[in-house]
Length: 413
Ligand SMILES: O=C(O)C(=O)C[C@]1(C(=O)O)C=C[C@@H](O)C=C1
Picture 1 (tube, rainbow, N blue to C red):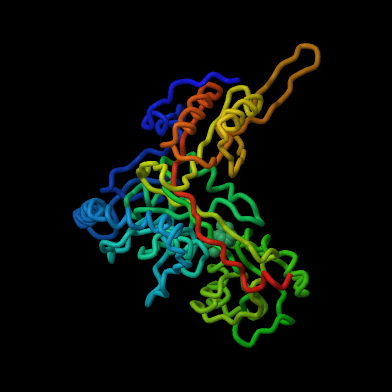
Picture 2 (picture 1 turned 60 degrees about the vertical axis):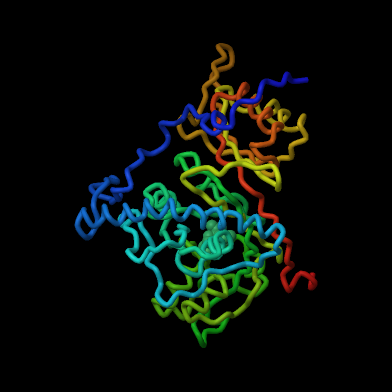
């Protein structure tokens, strides 16, 4: 039986991290990053520096006044526990916001007092719908890459980012696990979004005309069998996001290409739906996390989840001990993921007689069903800290408990 060490303070637990140097340099809100001569540099934007500074000052002051809104928004996931809230998609805009890019992280001057939520993709992407579910009254800000969404929050251009981490069919979105470690943002919530894919093409185009299907790689993977069943053994091509695929077809008038995307993308880009609900499993769900600059205060009056990442100098040998710290306290794990240890990917073990073994090194990510305010979780983490050389709490946040709403096709199976 393991000895139970005294519970560390919540604050110390949230700060555990010998890998602080992995976090990017943080810039003051008066700066914006631009890509110049191959590297990101802080600089003023289009208008004068003074304009930019006053814009940022407004942004910064809004953060205080938005706190109430923010709390409400974060609680909206909570209220969906009791209030049976349905999916709240961001309404169709009169104009389409332009995606932030790494070279242009300039905020849209039309910001007001609404919560600004960065997502990867263009309007009509599932990530935009996830942002709308997480923060129903938010202003969703499109970003061309996951990295840009992280930076938008760090630079106070956005207040939150909503990013996919795993899908029930396609598995983990590894890039976001790596970025969670590289950046200093905190997970403050999660939303699970049922993903219903459609096959979209220009008006008048029939399935027989197609020789290419384009979409986000996750969406292509989620529909692979159905596409084959539909007789579409044509080329598949990966693009940055599902709605971007629809936009590309419309913008280039491609009559031989279909996109896998949402019904909302069809509406936004003027495409026809050739087939709907084409995901291989009718209960296809993507899990997104909400990220913020500050953690939320963990509670015990509703179901919470905590996400951690850890590593150990001696590799996988420690895994059993870490898992047992949770098992002994009846804390269920909901997810375990490993990623290469980017700083030290290989460990050499020399044996004079046999040679040199090359072990791969990993970072382990675990989600468990307990709040950091729960003494069981605090004790488990105190114990995990003893076994590991690096431990960071990525966030302790309310679980998405939205009641399950089966797809219209669930009964057909
Ligand atoms: O391309 C989109 O629409 C996204 O929001 C991205 C994404 C993903 O990264 O998994 C989100 C949900 C679906 O699983 C498919 C794609």
